[in-house]
Image 1 (cartoon, rainbow, N blue to C red):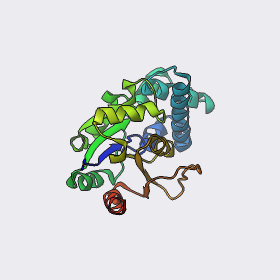
Image 2 (cartoon, rainbow, N blue to C red):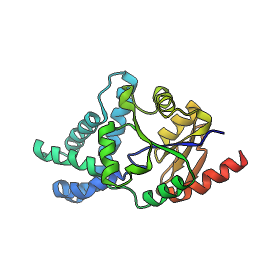
Image 3 (cartoon, helix red, strand yellow):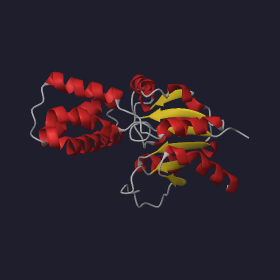
Image 4 (tube, helix red, strand yellow):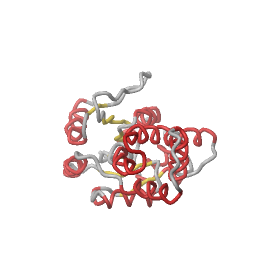
Length: 229
């Protein structure tokens, strides 16, 4: 029987994108939280649009475009050197508090663990190193290698090829509903990390294979599911 392969999303799942809020306070004050939310929202929108248009620019470009949009939305003049500092902050975002413990538990059960991200491989590797969690993974798989973005089926197919796994034995781990839906639609299993009680899963015809509130719950939930599968 093949070992279960786990594909971990990065931004919003392992790494807390709201960590940029602290740096933003230096530029936008009390608007930092709202600014951070819109920046992330537009970042994802630009990924989706470029994927559909087949007009690829990498994650960093989409992130910078989204930053420019958000500055205009809030009528804020942030100088180019200061924008570069904010982009640099995006490369050292913090992990969620539960991540390391959750990865230790999963690793102890012998799961094959990979990172699978919309981000560029070098940027993702830097985030993992900064968070001191890089050693838990066999490798980093980036959509940049196929010049598209999640939830394009091609990127999930690419992950299976790169990880030498099959859909029936591969799980996507993500806090992003669009990613979970994309993976399940492609034929993988997927765990949704519902990081806040307010987070809503898209009311489509596709549901997560399992739902947990943190990575520390994930190992037991996968074991329980597998025992009944």
